[in-house]
Length: 125
Image 1: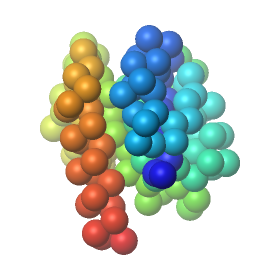
Image 2 (image 1 turned 90 degrees about the horizontal axis):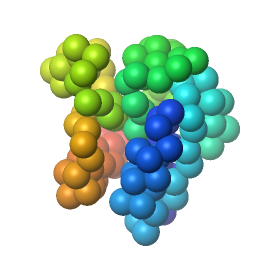
Image 3 (image 1 turned 120 degrees about the horizontal axis):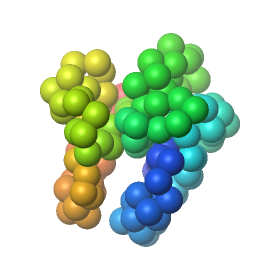
């Protein structure tokens, strides 16, 4: 069962994503980027989903640190955002995120994005 790390400071978002994913994936959660980095190194997830706007360490900084970390730099990372921060999906993809999940969360879209990225990861090795 693939392991997904969800990094988000909003408990409602964490709960909703966990509800969407628990039957098909092993889910690990973290409340900020710092905690997420610690758990990513320890758990070695197959995929990471991170919010962009968080206290302690935001999603962009988390992504930048993860991409330089030997243990997790090949793990695909999906951004979750409401785009209220002035960040666009295109800009996040250009930075290197593997995908973008818009808020409010829609179950079908979340599952499709995750399945596509994991399938592409399996094909590319």
